[in-house]
Image (cartoon, rainbow, N blue to C red; front, side):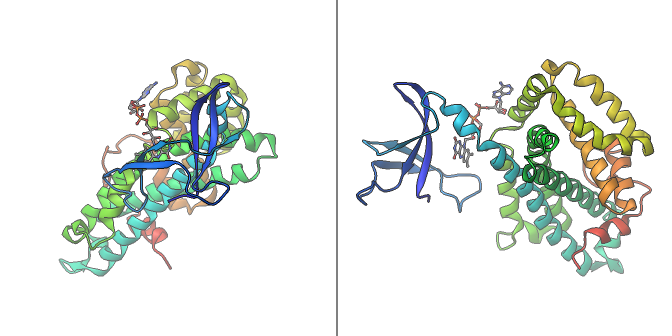
Length: 320
Ligand SMILES: Cc1cc2nc3c(=O)[nH]c(=O)nc-3n(C[C@H](O)[C@H](O)[C@H](O)COP(=O)(O)OP(=O)(O)OC[C@H]3O[C@@H](n4cnc5c(N)ncnc54)[C@H](O)[C@@H]3O)c2cc1C
């Protein structure tokens, strides 16, 4: 599908990064053989294949022997893509869910107002809001890399956002299908496609565990990177005891970066999302996020929110 492929291969100087164009300089097809296309769970519009190179023309990219470093230099951008893309997938699914639930009435009211359904939709709205704010915070940092502190934010929060948004998107697409019911299980509906696409984001450009390892690497090699991130959480922690408790725990955990775990990365993602929502979202949304994501009494599935203004939270997520 592409006009060229970046390939890491063994050369005389070690593992190197090569740019392999589809065509040779004389215009003839390059020596790229496609053995087979892969039959994937989803992501069908993007062809993935097993290939062989036979006397292929290739151009060295970066320094010979430094191929892994060269190819990974693009990973920060592509990982950001999947943090943003997962928030987008959540948004697309949520829009389907809200439209259906606002327009189908049962038991005398739109589904979105039913007492067991409203907390589900509100919970999904919170998940999307947190994911979008986290992804766009990283995008802002990426745009401001000339600033030392923003460069550090981008270095630390890119794997955090890739980890968390890509972990959460599968659950959101499944719960949206549930919230729509049988029609969302039919292939004419967009939801099956969202559902099949979602788990891929947590695999390609590095799995969840690889993101955790990367966070550990940052904390070990650039321990200062945590400071500008914690500085954004601190003013919010002063107002919200649950954020303060999460902050204390994170500060303790980062002192031993060798033990970086999914737990730490999850707490960090939630604390950053909470701080962003308190700063940028309506209070009702921010307070619900803090209470449900950092407090006790939040179930592992969606829809276990209690005692919150569900309609206000859902309304925040309605389009127009
Ligand atoms: C549709 C699709 C397109 C892709 N496109 C590309 C592409 O264009 N270019 C490319 O280079 N790659 C591509 N990939 C490959 C993708 O990046 C890898 O599949 C992914 O990084 C996981 O590696 P793996 O499959 O070898 O799994 P493994 O490395 O075998 O991992 C299996 C499991 O073990 C865990 N694990 C592995 N090592 C550790 C560790 N040290 N500590 C803890 N847990 C660990 C992983 O998290 C995972 O859960 C693509 C994959 C897919 C599905």
